[in-house]
Image 1 (cartoon, rainbow, N blue to C red):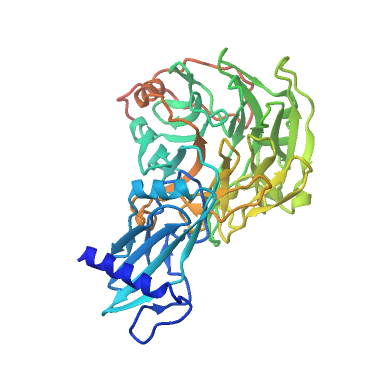
Image 2: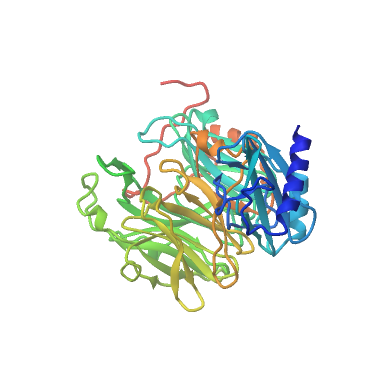
Length: 510
């Protein structure tokens, strides 16, 4: 039956190639529908990497059967048929098609059949970029939490050229620990920092080394950025209480009561403060290194409240962060003084989550109404700052929050978290960026089952793109997390310093 439908489709396509602009209402061919079909996910007009996994989708139209033809300017077309509307594209055929159509367009024709009659929609169109994305995506999967209670959290790795994924670290194996703030140097997997917060195993940061060794550092690293050399990592120390709104689409909110920036050097295990970035009258957060490692960019604002204050403090929704940078000499380790790059007043909002592209041309950042955490603000959009001339422009604007942008190693793609697909659940999306900063239409990371995003209770955030597969053993990570800290830094205690949880060996109970 399926073979006959495919043959029927081929015949029908042959009948319509003479004059697709004419509607066929006389029964001699399919009726032309003057619009594209509704599909989920919606990949129409997307610009896709030349190595991305198949864009499986569901045709959201009423019909008894669907036939689909995916064709490019070169190569053999892919022909599929489905009664449910679910279109699962064979990975081998897909790879061949996008390989020979690199830098060109692909179209997807959809025929819908009911009661012996056929309807032909306007074709969906894709553009295959003349660039590949880093093969591996590391992200955090979690259930949205509205209280400080145990909730599943995993650090997961996905092969973007296939549908294979696996868990790097699961909080369930660490007494439902919170796992966060994973980071890597310059899209390389040989070193990683990841924070854990466990009632049994304490507050700590795991640091992996190229030789596979894992250190447990008795300090909570906040938002972290590796120097491109891998010799040091800058991180923020924050005091971030949650609070809740009674009436708005996103009830959760947070405020940065106190923060500063420190540096960790993995070879020595030394942690030190960055003196210009520890001003008690300022809030300094979101460090990110320039591609050449000579500047550390960060976000800052004046601290408007005293050490002891109510939650949330008065005026919290008037706090807006500027984008700054400070010079660093890798040879001497000397720091310069902070200088303004882009002000909150100039962009008309607060700047957060800056990330530098590895070609040295761009900084992506989030702009939101106030504060430092755009994920919980519906008006958060992603901007691009051109470092060659200081100009900036909106890059990704959607009705829902866009956050956590990160760059591919070739600076041609952004991966980011978005609520554009769903009000409550962040999904990871990919967007092409050409050398001049022009962006293609973003698309959600494809799944083997295209209906996954409609049924899963997992939210996906904090994407990081990697050139190679993380080689660290999960068992080594768990053993290190359950052990006593191997590095105990001596830092001054401020209100931004998290209180250490008491370490208890495995099996201990409250």
